[in-house]
Structure formats: C-alpha cells, structure tokens
Image (cartoon, rainbow, N blue to C red):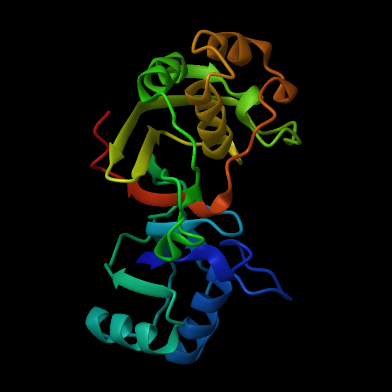
Length: 245
C-alpha cells in the first residue's frame, strides 16, 4: 500500500498501545476489513508530527478480495488525515523496508514575514532571509558516503551503522516556500531534520558553508546541535526498482 498522511495528530508511524499512531490506525482498519490481525511493515518509521506523501507498507493475508475493494474500504474506515492512495499485489518476499533501494524526503520552510494559516503544522515558519546559494554550497559537502554521527539523534544504538550515503540534495524557492529535497539510500533517525537545521544556520550566516565538512569529520552530535521542527518534513517517495542512482 502507498499511503499519504498528515502526521500532526499522531505520535509517529510506529504502533504504540496507548497513543494514536499512523500504523495503529491502519491496523485497526485492516482488522475490520479482513476480520483478522496482520503484521504491517512500513518503509519508514516517521517521527511524531512528520507527514508522508509516499509511505509504503505491506502485509500478508490468505483472504481473497479485489484490490480496489480493499482501497475503498480502508479509506472509508481511516480518519481524514490518513489515506491509502494505491494498493498493489507483490511477491511474498517483498518487504517495504528491506526491499527499499532509496528514499526521497522533502522539507518545507514557509519563508515570509507573516505566517499562513494554511501552512500551520505543514511547514517550518521562518520569517528571516536565507542565502540559498550558500545553503546549496554547504549541502555539497554532504553528498556521498559519510559517517553521519554528527547529524543523527545522538543516542544511537551501538549496532546501528552511522555510515550513510546521500545521492542528491536540491534547494529551491517556490513562491514563499523553500523546498529542500534529500535523496539517499537510508537515513539515521533525525538525520534529515538535523541536516536542514544546519543548512538554515548557514543560510542565516551563523555558520560557514565550509564548516559542514568539519562537522561531518568530528562525528560528534554536539557539533550540530540543531533540529528542524517535525512539521516541515515529508516522506515524499520510497524507491524500489526505480531508484535513479
């Protein structure tokens, strides 16, 4: 299933027994339709407040039904801020997370003097001027394979490999919105949000673009103590066989 959601009302993707989550809502809807409990695997465990335009999740069942019927039924059962936009049958060995070749994350900054009610909890309201050319220059140091410990949540488990590869970062201003797109194979927790916040510091002139290389090489979370708000982040697309890199 390919799923869209606004994450503002949820404690992230991952199921929690006592709090509303996106996975939890989907599991409830699936149980009602299938009349059985299934295991639902998501491609990305998005954090509380993070949105998605292309989350992917899969489950296995022996029940027979048309894919269109499943999609219509789930969308009738799900809340207004979670919708299934596509349903496909896949091989039994498909795994939304392990089969993924790469991911595209979009971060949106609403960049004007006055906030917009239409952007509330859907972007990071940032009223100050940013030097986009310097931000682009800084982002170039992040491309390729690096140890991204400085750009992680910081409290990572020992078994988690901090080495990740970023294939593309684009930064563009569309009307009053600055869109930062990051494409990579996989990401550490908070990695995109720390990257965005650090690039914003460069755009403000509080960091030099060249300092990004030093922050990377330090492998120290304290060197980049910034975190962009969750409401600006979107899981835009999960790539499988169509990954362009």
